[in-house]
Amino acid sequence: MEHNLTIYNTLTRKKELFKPLNEPFVGMYVCGPTVYGDPHLGHARPAITFDLVFRYLKHLGYNVRYVRNITDVGHLELDLDEGEDKIAKKARLEEVEPMEVVQFYSDRYHHFMALLNVLQPSIEPRASGHIIEQIGMIQKILNAGFAYVQNGSVYFDVVKYSQSHNYGKLSGRKLEDLIANTRELEGQEEKRNPADFALWKKAQPEHIMRWPSPWSDGFPGWHLECSAMGTKYLGDTFDIHGGGMDLLFPHHECEIAQSRIANGKEAVKYWLHNNMITINGQKMGKSLGNAVMLEEFFSGNHPLLEKAYSPMTIRFFILQAHYRSTLDFSNEALQGAEKGLKRLMAGMETLKSWQLAVGSTQQKDTTAPLHHCTTAHGSRIQDLISSCYAAMNDDFNSPVVIANLFEGVRIINAVTEGKESLTSDEVIQLQHLFQTVVTEILALQDESSGEQSETVDRLMELIIGLRQDARAKKDWNASDRIRDELEKLGIVIKDTKNGATWETKQSQITR
RNA sequence: GGUCUCGUGGCCGAGUGGCUAGGCGGCGGUCUGCAAAACCGUAUACAGCGGUUCGAAUCCGCUCGAGACCUCCA
Image (cartoon, rainbow, N blue to C red; front, side):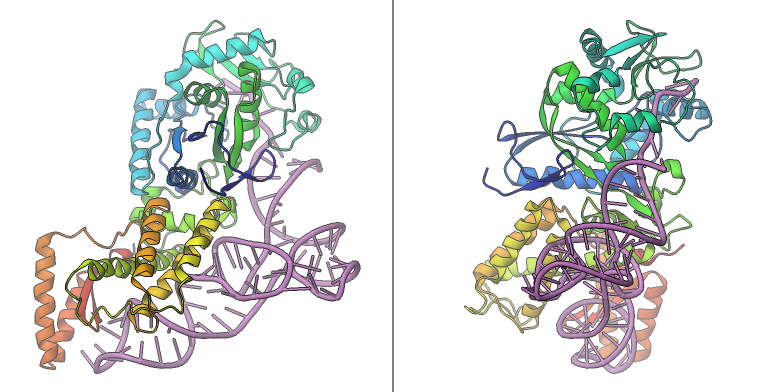
């Protein structure tokens, strides 16, 4: 594969040239959602980040197997007074089967990811469907002597592990510090050392999610599923493991240790971590109570939201920041993203329309004044293309890609106004660039059209025609009345040089 | 408290030892019956104080400020 893709590897803390283990195949595992609640803006970030990675690797020609799990057992609600399995807790609250909760929120997650134009992963395994694999992995670790059983629970022996391995190498922690700084928590007395972590937990009587195992009726420790499922579907060693920075420690650190012992080798070549979305400078998270649900963004129904924001606005907003930077939420920022996206898509629409002009045997009418041959700026489009690829290859720098696209938009508009010109070749190159980068890689879609019925379109054509007649007769009363009444109905008329167009005001709905 | 990260113009956000990031907003303009929309142009920045350097927003130190993580707990 010919490319210069460099990826920031959390493990080495530097950018490395991407070289997969078994070209042209790439294995990528990303920590997916815990399906005990509705997806919020924070969920959109890793999904979109690794969607970008997935799409770009495919674009480069790799055959990518993308595994993103669904956590439906084991994760805990740390903020609850009494720690309890998140899913079991929710189930009891709503008096339904745990699997019903899991199904409901999985479906919701899929629904919203689809709206965000996030591709489905190649495999989406559930933790509850891989209990056998997890038990098998625990057995291997026990056999290797790096775990111990205590009252029906199994714990990983971090102290022993760190004698021969570097526990903490991913997150940059030292075992001594970890032990010294561990908070005193209840129920830790089973562990030989507070740094140890659970591989299997015995279920308490009230616990409704449980599976039989050689040690007790219980459930797997929360770090184990990713190791077990990653190994199962991607092999003992695979290329990329991704997830949010909040999972770096302990989750991914524990994964490294488990897999190292169970499989005898390093599991992951490149560790990628997306940063958090912040709100008023603080991490947005369900447990912090400051998360805005995706549904609320799309409906505008939230006290913090001045209006509704479309899925593509959210996607564009996220792609406008580099994935390793924090991204701060605000209405002002989102509205800026909304308008910027609109400008980008309008430019792309113009560019697309040239295709007709170029491909058609008939010359377009006077509204398409372009592509006079010129040699002055022959390499300009080529430079733009190179810049886009250079940015993508520089650790998926989507904000710089977008900045380059806006330069393309500027050129498109200048050509439209007759201030600049492009050769036919350049037009084709530019069209190809936008198609590839905007549609395939960034996966931004035009949301402005296609939602109205044909009847509405025809009616609007009629109304605009009538208004045009009134204007021709300088009957401004009638003309303005039509415009104002339509506006009350949420339809905005836009007069341009080449006649009027219209659009619905959905993007301006306020609560 | 420990470990780490960050501090860029009104807002969001790239980049980086000397070369315009970009978007939104503002301002000016084009268009327009008016308005809106659209388009064009444009100003404002690198938390503070020292140091290294021919040159630092970019490297080093300190100060101030902000943030993340610090474990299974039932």
